[in-house]
Length: 278
Image (spheres, rainbow, N blue to C red):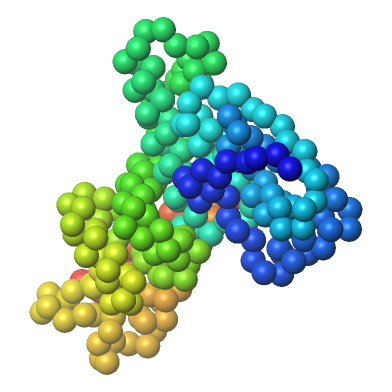
């Protein structure tokens, strides 16, 4: 059986299937063989981790196909695009992938500016009209600001992964609930503070959301005096915000424009309600 190299960074981008899905895939491969080739780059596995795991365990033959890339960044972008197109990802995973994609393209662009002699393939990969963030925003059907925020989120998750790959995995899968705003904010703090946050995450002591303070210094939404309707509204908005990116990424451009207008109309109604309370 061909020797395959497992790269830690790339492996993390190839999600392990849940137990039932993995079992069904295993049964299919045992019965019919591994029909889809594993994809390699310089001997490194970049697609087909679950198939490789099953074939190795049961000593089932498999085929491979090699792809050519000029850099790890290009491989990273290919893996991300491949995963986003075929998997039902969580909102956090989508944000992470978009941030990684942006950061990888910025590194490619920086390398292209630093050295004058680059391959035609690399030049074509990094030439585009407008900024990287604007182009990726159009590709993923989100705003430019969302791409920038996602880059910060990806940076934080990378830092967290250096201290605890398991904490990073749990955040991405939703086993640990931490808001994107908190993760984005952590991108600008010293690494020792991130290390402290990771320790709190592992101990279950980290507050996933920044507390909202009233003018008197009390937590508005946890107060016993808060109206039940307000608590219910806050829950609805929080749930909607967590799922909005995932929903938006699945829509066509026309549908996303319609949804954006509907969201703007809803925000306007809430703002009118707020003004009437003054």
